[in-house]
Length: 180
Image 1 (tube, rainbow, N blue to C red):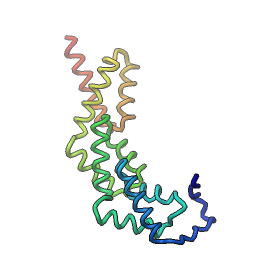
Image 2 (image 1 turned 135 degrees about the vertical axis):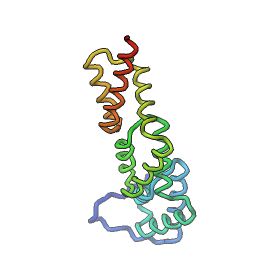
Image 3 (image 1 turned 90 degrees about the vertical axis):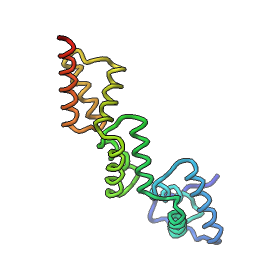
Image 4 (image 1 turned 60 degrees about the vertical axis):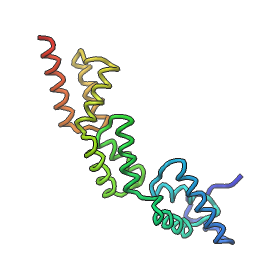
């Protein structure tokens, strides 16, 4: 059983006896990790550094090589991740931004990816899908308390206050028109 490297900075980095073998092994592991799912550069770096048989210099070389070949691209990763999140579950810009930040992507990359993802599917369409889904599951809000829960749900999904307010007013007006 192999021991994972600890994050203790006092621990010395092990001396690598066969650098070429370690480089090839690190490259193979990186390709293997990327076959399971796309990853950001920092995510891959962190996973590669968990192993004792490599060091930061070798990992940096491997990441540079993978970037050169086009297997690692943070912007492309962020765009596809944001688009898939929007397709899977209707969430707002704020939640998408948080999820992309958890992937340790820089702010400019996150902003550009969000901009492109929201160009393809505007936030208005996404919140409409979220509202339809919630109405299917819970039905129309009957009481003031139900309406507040609905409102809070949309805010928790990452939609802006203004957008949620507008949509809730439109929903209430539509309900009022149906009653008459």
